[in-house]
Image (cartoon, rainbow, N blue to C red; front, top):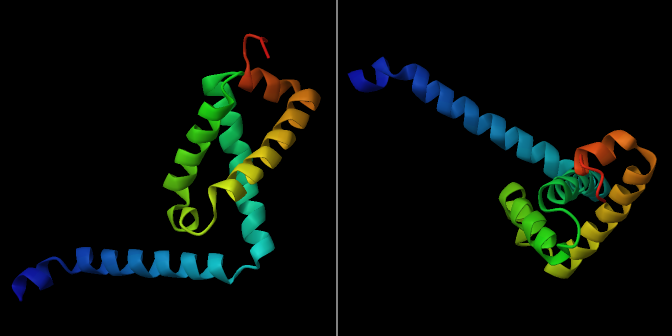
Length: 118
């Protein structure tokens, strides 16, 4: 009993963390599907840009796998729900958006390809 009293702050911290995670999950799941999809698409745009910067051009399948691995890590619960084909379609949409950004924004182009080879 003294051990519980001596470590009350640890117990309180764990309970607060559990409540925070629960509330965050409830807020996310309460959002309309379109809002969730918009957040996932924004994250995918970041992920494909990062994959392009790290792996370069001409490595399409490797980049897809890289982004999928990041997706599984970030959205474990969602990776169990959606098919890989749907994921690949969302990645293709993010790639189209990234290509438009590369055409219109030199700063993004420099981030993806500092040497200017793309």
